[in-house]
Image (tube, rainbow, N blue to C red; front, top):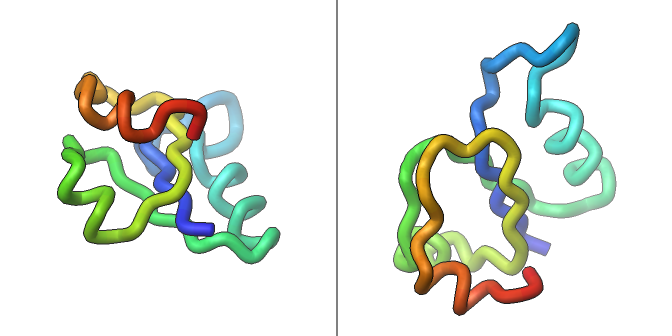
Length: 73
């Protein structure tokens, strides 16, 4: 599954990086993980054939068209 992981890689929370453990877990389970902290749009999601989105500390507002297209994903 192609999973988009939104959030910073270098923001320390306690002793670990915020999305590093999530990313490692998803990769271990044989998923393709695309990580980004930049503003995304529907074209970005289509380009990488994103099937599921995880947001953890992402600083940008996710547009309503993305929310509609990825409802329950």
